[in-house]
Image 1 (spheres, helix red, strand yellow):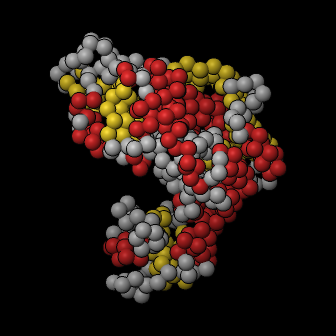
Image 2 (tube, one colour; image 1 turned 90 degrees about the horizontal axis):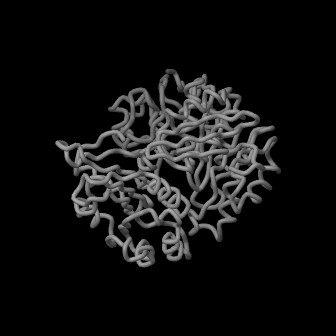
Image 3 (cartoon, helix red, strand yellow; image 1 turned 45 degrees about the horizontal axis):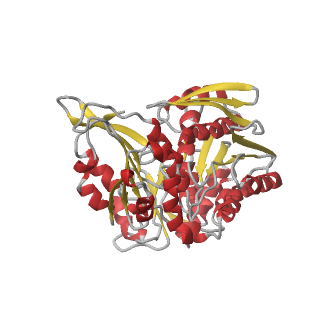
Length: 474
């Protein structure tokens, strides 16, 4: 695929190209670079210029740099720019400008990556769809996604995130979406905001980038809905709200959660669609409502999208389920729910609901009755109220269905102390301590949820549990 020629990239960025090269992709990481990629030498913790020689040796078609690095000849295929990040932004802007794609942008405190992946799954089965990789949703991830977009793209799905005020609007203006969706607003990144209302105002800034007559999609039943609505009404050509209530234009009208699936009836306009998702979760069903609304706003086929949501599974670490076979002879094992990528009070509640809906197996392990067990790590970046927010998890209704809660981290100590004695498992200062004792935490027949912020490192527990047996698809 011809993504960028030297002349096109130079014109887009205002840089100077050496040689007459063509690239087929754009990369910022020499560990995953593919032959023919344009390597972008960003400077963050490490200076990307130190890896240019390696990128070219691995077959990069060219490198975008602000200076010629040591060990690289001045005749090498380069794009020399004044500032690499600014040039990447300009390349992304040019990538967006040259395509006729219908673009949807997604943000939200919880569920934006899952919603982005749902959209990519269903739209890719209808036309040529380009979507953000992983959680590439920040000041370099959004322009990188746009710079990677092929000319002939029909649909583009862009994820936009933030950590501080003022970050979303510039990225939304860069993406220029025809549809902008907010999944929800919750107590996340409170260290950088005075309150949840401030988070809502920042999330609502995604509407600043809407194309003329663009469509805003937002949750209609949360405390900050009025803030989101005010921003959407000021900037969007049409506003859609989603939820279960009749006042919403996009509705979840019925929901069944089983051990292994979510079955939902979703009303879009005057048509009710049956949706099956291959993992349980009320939050996944609500995300699906927003997805079908976005598909309609993009001009896609909603009926096909509703059907094709059955092909979607959660991204790794965001609620993925698997069976860990502890006894290969007797075929006895546990169900592991890996939700270790991130956590906040809202997503904790959703994950515990999934755990409560999953049935353990009885009579097959050392303990006669299978258990629902949670291993929970610290929720980070919650600001001054972090202790109370952790302790408050003890009042979540679905915790009543959980048999045992193990906690890792100084903040999770507050939850552990608030739990009834019969639900208190182990508390440890670090997740590594729990991981080292993983074989004592579980038994055949159990269902194990592991959840925490990425920085809590509870993924170490997931890794340790996997090493106890043979993973199989659940």
